[in-house]
Length: 446
Image 1 (cartoon, rainbow, N blue to C red):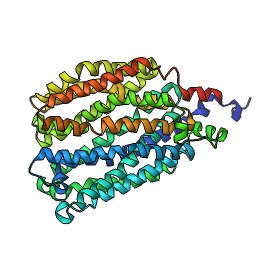
Image 2 (image 1 turned 120 degrees about the horizontal axis):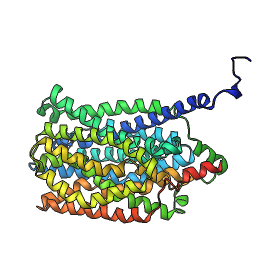
Image 3 (image 1 turned 180 degrees about the vertical axis):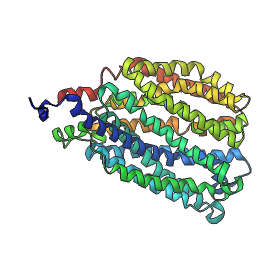
Image 4 (image 1 turned 30 degrees about the vertical axis):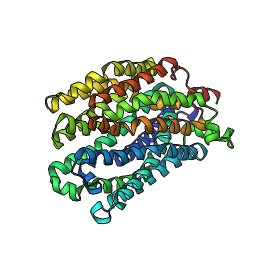
């Protein structure tokens, strides 16, 4: 007998290896592009302590923070438009094209901020240009979430979909972490505080624009998902669009309901926490950055663990765990962080918060993707999610600072608790998407 096997007699595992390698590579590239987009977006939050005075001159640091937070929130309010626009592109013309265009738009927004003149140079045109750049970034990010969540969920196998999809938040958090690392390097090794406030805050935005170009090149080589190709071949004239989205009102409402509590909690412990540690806890700039960076590293490590757990026990138990514990412990945790005695205690308390919040962040993307058919998946994931994030996530920092300025800081803790409790109701009523996945149902039909 010949020792050389024919292709038909080769082992299934040997034949599957190249396919699995391509799958993992595509998921990796899609995730890295997501990291770059979120780095660009969160540079604004990470460096706002330094550039706020350049655009909003004021003797009150809280008022300056509120002004920059307001523009941060406005960047979120255009995300539903971005979700609809890029969702349509992703559903109609392919996930890869939507991912490429979204990162290109993010590049333009970052470059505009890097080159923006200050208030001292052009007056009110400075914050106007800053706002325009943030709107471009908001449009980009509105399209990025739905497109990347859909791409990662469709590329992953059913058995490991929760694990692979969790890397969307690993890279989302990684984008924030990268922004903080750049801030730490500039703070401690390159520039002093005066130089950062004068011109050094522009550096990370130039870096972000360059990284976006690299991500664009990487994404141009991504393969299209089988789910999209199959659905387009079957139903080419009914792919994407607002009309088709409106045929799924229940799923849209579920996405809004399951997102509202999770996104508010996420932004409390990420973008707002940096201001909270400085303005309320009283940590120094360097301590604030170090604690924020350390907690984000811890959070990123939790995501794939929780994602893999959801592949074994289902998505719903993790969501319920987040909402129940979040409803019980948000007020005690934020109160304890407010009275933390030093950076290590603050870090430990924020880490405890992430043990709770990761029940949502690790799997929320795959849950949404599993709700919709391929013909409307990118739009269905992106638009209702963007609406919820615009209302509850993007406004979190501004609302928190408003409570603080009004002398009722603890009122924000109760507000966050109430929103998480509303999501708890949705989690109790919804089905477990791992057991009722539209992605798996469509795969079974092919």
